[in-house]
Length: 491
Ligand SMILES: [Zn+2]
Image 1 (cartoon, rainbow, N blue to C red):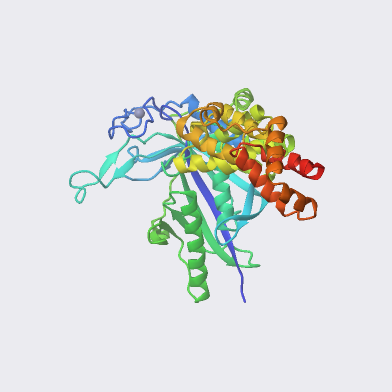
Image 2 (cartoon, rainbow, N blue to C red; image 1 turned 120 degrees about the horizontal axis):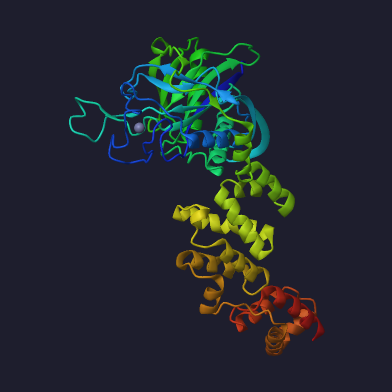
């Protein structure tokens, strides 16, 4: 029986988080009145000249450095020629033979998944990055929400000229989950250093996948299909999975594949043909005569590098080394920069890094997820969570009470100490007070005490229950257990 190998290459377009466009001063703000943010440059009027936005270069450098790529000291902008209504100049200013960054490698962590999509075991994988280059975005054709859309198409050029970083990989992925882990890695890296919001749902990170299959052992690649309209990382993973099954099905039934572009339809859970190879473009690239070569000095690169935060992988390693966290704990806590910051603050306040990790992973993240919030917007400040954890660790309240207090903190925004005082939750750990209760309980149940001493050890639970009841649930169970054991034996 034949087995099949999957080959995937990815292209990511990430919008760089500048306030103005890459070659003019127009705003990049999203959601403004159509065509409000336009000028002769981004409208492509004759005689208008582009001027490169320095901030776009700095953010492009951040993106490259966050992915561990080298930046070329000189790169060239080129014109990519094609006709489309949302491209008023008739060409897009991009980079071609001398890009901003080329021939890099990126190590990611990836995992096989079980049926439910949960990671089974993580391993490192190195992906070859063909290039990262800078370019301008096109405008948008609008087919909805305006009068006579059945007869007319509308064009909104607010997005035309928005700066993008395009990141292209070699065909190095062998499964849809590897592609999934890579896109998440890139997305987090770009967000982490502030290069891009990298939100696929908002369209400021777009992804295309080139997918083919071949029989195991074959040297040459099979016919590749380009997948578009992948509006989330999960959609992309599903689209690739569907496409691989489809391609294998065609080949095993003796058919052949077309080189084509297919769109993912999430509702129908299938890919559909968008265009075939005959319609593929010849872009006739040539150097942009209106822009000089882009020179990025080593000094600028170092300046950008030194202004960047500690990168996620370094932070994950430090969390494991310094705080003794497991790989999965450290990975989750570095999944977002705001969460990593939150964790470190909490750990510092409560002086117990492992407890902080447990509380955040099991309790706080559940509340945040239910409220649809990120750690940066948590109604419970890291300092307050740290204090709550300390109350529990010091035995002032029980772990169970702590969880209830956290839910209340989340709702009310009050501090842990305030809620504990208000609800009279403070746990009794004072041995004198607990001893007095135990003495009274033993005295009232002398018969059971004698049976216990005679070997009926199951009665211990009965005594714990009586003491907890007499303390109205406030006695520290750990102290009760210790004191009760010695008192029952001694009496
Ligand atoms: Zn403009």
